[in-house]
Image 1 (cartoon, rainbow, N blue to C red):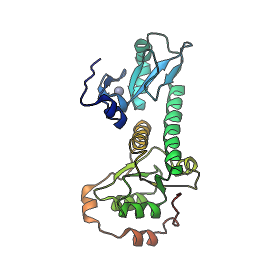
Image 2: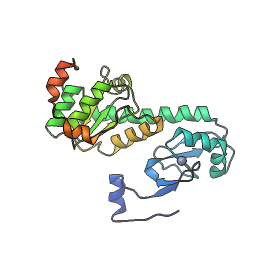
Image 3: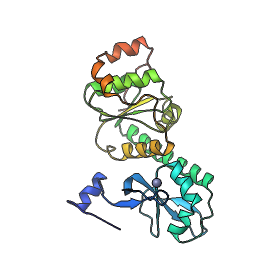
Image 4: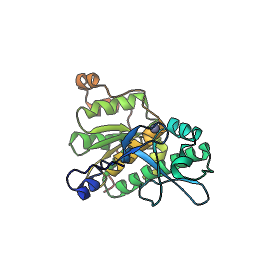
Length: 242
Ligand SMILES: [Zn+2]
């Protein structure tokens, strides 16, 4: 197992910049461990997802990809890597992964929102983007094409933009608010954990939004967000939760 260390290991770990690499049991490609899913096998032969990547014992690593999961089951890669028969089937494992990854994102969103570090609702988020406060912008997967375009126009260079593998209703439920399509991360406490959990879920769901970030579009668009929002009947303004 190659482990290359640069600088202070403790600090890098704190920043989530670990450079431990692992190999996917299905496609055999190597990736940074934080981008992979780690599985352990229970005594009864059930496959468990070790999201913290810290459970003791043998682990099997997998790309956050449903095709690698299927491929891994087909070639009995989990049993081999974990040195014991795996009794879970592919469908229940797939459901377990989806549930755990979604719960992780929802829990991060809930904590960040209650800590006043997550803005919710388009107008509030766009105000935060304009003031330079928002560092990471999240769109629900089922946000309309027009809304995503509006968000993209607001982004320009900064902040980082991402669609998450959650629906508007799921985001709303996570933060105890109504249906919510757009979130903006502010403050420092969730800068690593929320984007990471959100990107991992999106990768797993295999969802990419129909409109990808287009730098040409961003460069040519100078529309004022507030007026375009009003014209399109945007969400009513929401107060920040702090
Ligand atoms: Zn793979």
